[in-house]
Length: 332
Ligand SMILES: [Zn+2]
Image 1 (tube, rainbow, N blue to C red):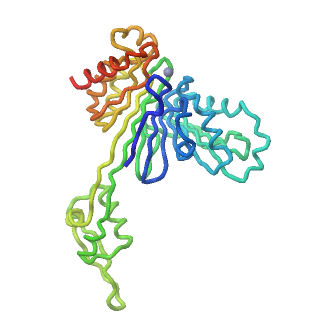
Image 2: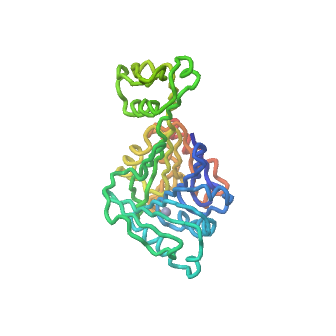
Image 3: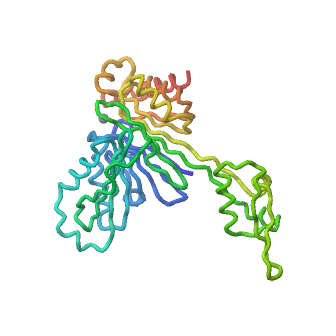
């Protein structure tokens, strides 16, 4: 389970902080001004997903670096084509002659996502952030991160420059109910790991699951029980949540189709709504969405909840109109 919140007021720099409570770590979508986050929350961040490097989405890099410097920290950053050069320029702006004396291991793993491949570069603090190429051209098909507990997918959108939208999907959580295990006099052991794998694979209910029984004499023996019965009696499955994050993007058919596909059935969808629809022409010129377009996209994606952000400062005092316009289109 995770919780998510906007880092700043919707008129200020965009960004969403995701707290993965079960892992005591956090993820970040976009790296604008993060001074609103206390250092302890910044230190929990293990992965940062940047949409693009316009200044309001990336100026937080320096503050992040400053907080993490001198600590044991491995952080992964993801971004669009050109991202590695931008990170390299940031790191290249400072003098690092004394960091070789540091005893800690602060490392940045930077992944640049292209349409069909990714490039990975690593920077160690102890080597003065000298870039190390880990992968020049690795195959990539839209999944930026794939772990036991979650996946993060990305779509490359058009914002005059490539801009990445992301979706975070938790995998279903399979809990073993210890009491039920005792009631059935089944032992704890590696077979439970195999059972979980079988559920993840989606094996049919009649699949036999081999269970070692407690040794009564020298010879261990096994019984088998059908997967379906075990699922019913000793397993509790909690479905994973899905969150999507769509920042700067122009409204076009192509972008809309990609956003709807990426954000499909999100439990919560964060999407930018900088302009009122009466200023649609201006929004188009600036490669941004209107609040109505944001609401429509969230409805078409079948999102359960909508959170709009990244309001243009020209609407200060008209925040309600922006929200209402988005919500009306969302609920239509
Ligand atoms: Zn932008």
